[in-house]
Length: 495
Ligand code: NAD
Ligand code: 6OD
Image (tube, rainbow, N blue to C red; front, top):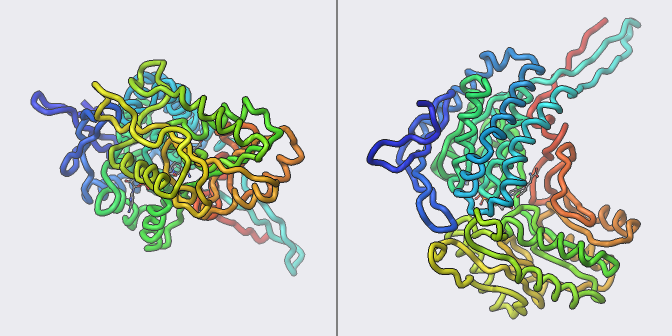
């Protein structure tokens, strides 16, 4: 049986690597634990250097097999079948994502899983309309020459993914890479390996040839992540994760001068003007701070509010955040899950302690919730709001990646822009104002890749997505993804 989970009568289920269309065991299995209860979800087979090498070799072979000979139309049709395959097994993907991440099923069922499928459909469309360029040039003999560019796949793409939106972020890379005719070796996060492996079953069902999509499980340094990114036959690397990991991967990619596409960390600001629609600003900021327990790269951790509405805004956000409910992710009443792991909880709580030590006013939360019973071993933390910290505080400058924000007043538009820009990161911002002239003016001045006005995480998948400064290299989405996953070759014809 070619299934993601292998099981013997005596052992717990073990999630396998997916290489050349088959599920294969690797080295020593590691544990995947549910962050809601701390219980074992499954064992996961860690790919050793040999398994990673097998996966890369299979991906190289597949470039020259039926995949490499398929027309763009055929590839596009196969990708649509992959999207259909995810939707057919929606409940299975949903359960796997919820068990791995602990996020509420209500969230994963309207974001993670449908977007996993949508990513295949959008790039199946996109590849059909991809164009290149032609230039006619004069030559001394008067006959001229014609230049035209053709697009070719880059080859084998190493795809290294984080744990916060596992299926969504992985397919956001895999779908355009495959649409362009590449093959991939995916290294999902060690925290959330299941949906990447399940997708292997869907790939087989959809008729994706063996070796086109491969999955290797494991960790970063001295494990599958490093083996993959250092592998000389990987032709390009796409990575989403922490900026510090991006730095390590960029060093690995420099051997052999391989191109990289990076979506990295953020310390995103929201700027709330006094003329905003306060109800909408509170609803949007609630999502941007607390959705996915604050573990969204685009999430807001710094909120700047114009002074006349500062006190009202703080009180309203506190009231709304007090209504968040933690518990069983499959219960519709649950609106906030745990952090991904006990290790991440220790990191977030260390910032909660720093905030107190640096003299923050703790408006809400600041610790661990009083949850007992089945969830006592979960990695829950309280939704937390601070005011009163200096802008130099580590809590205001560093990415925490938890359900928390610091709120600071401002007195002028220029001051708000300067505060928002005072960060080594530049991923996203949300501006709340009913004055559209101001919105355009401020949006143009904030040094980020993505600005929302009166909304947050409203996604058109054709638009450029990515970060400035230390938040990334390159843009994903629509044609921008295709730029990374293809190489342009110019053909010059002397007429
Ligand atoms: P992470 O950087 O710790 O891990 C990401 C992946 O890299 C994992 O699969 C990990 O095993 C692997 N890895 C770690 N070290 C490696 C190494 N030396 N070589 C190769 N692979 C290695 O990130 P995370 O904790 O999984 O995710 C959270 C981070 O991701 C946050 O910083 C968040 O802002 C960022 N993120 C950014 C975006 C974006 O679009 N900009 C989206 C989601 C998450
Ligand atoms: O919506 C997307 O395409 C995307 N890449 C979202 C990233 C969220 C980060 O946590």
